[in-house]
Image 1: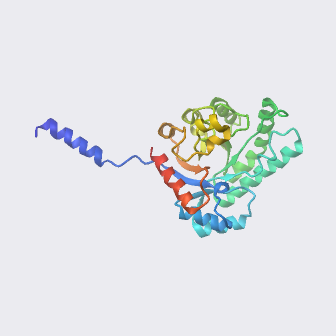
Image 2: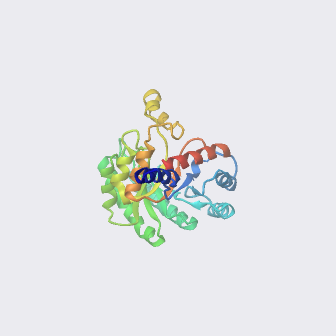
Length: 287
C-alpha cells in the first residue's frame, strides 16, 4: 500500500469510527399532553418511565402535589405553561380582565420558581374582531412590563410563544416585540410546529437567535391541512410531517441553542405512546 492509499484508508476508517454529533437539547414533555389516566404523580411516573428527564407543568396546579411528584420521580421542570393566558388575555379591552391575566402570569412565575424552572410560557396577546393588532401590541407590552420586576427578582424568564393568535406572525416582528422590552427577563418560547402552517421554523430560529429560551417540539402536515383543515395538520406523528428537522437542527446549532426541547404532540395516552414520542425526539435531535 502506497502512502496516498494508506492516508485515504486511514481517513475513511476514522470517519466511520467518529462518534455522531450530539446536541445539548434535553427532551421534556408538556404536562397537558400527557393523557395517561391517574394522579399528578402517576402521570409523572409514566413520563419518567418513558425516558423523559423533564416535564412542563401548568401553572395554578396544587404546588405541594407537583413538588411531591418532582421529588418522587426526579424529573426536572423544563418550563411552566401559564394556565390563564387564553381566558384572561393581556390584550383584552377590559382592564379587569387584563389585571386578572397579569395576576395569572405572576402566579406562573412563582410556580416556576418553586419547581426550579427558569421560564414561563406566555401567550402575550390575542388579536380578534374586538382587539386590533396595535391595541394587542401596546396593551400586552404594558402588562408584561408590570411583571418584569417580579421575573427579574425570581430569576425566571417570561418566554413568549408563537401560537395561532393572529399576532406576531413573522420572526422579524417577534424579535422586535421582545427587543422593545429592553430586558433580559423577556425571551421567546419557540413552537416549531405552529410555524409550519405559514412559514419555516429554521428561518424563525435564525432570526430569533439568542432570544430563544425554550422550544416546543411539534409536527405539522400541510397535506392534512389542505385536505382536512388547518388543525388537522397537527394530527401527524413525529418525522412524518413537513418539519425539516435536519434544517431546523442546523439552524439551532448556528445560533448556539442549548436547553430543553418540550414535546407538545399527540400520542401520550399510554406509557408506550410516551416512549414512542421520546424515541422519535431522540432521532429529531440527532438529525
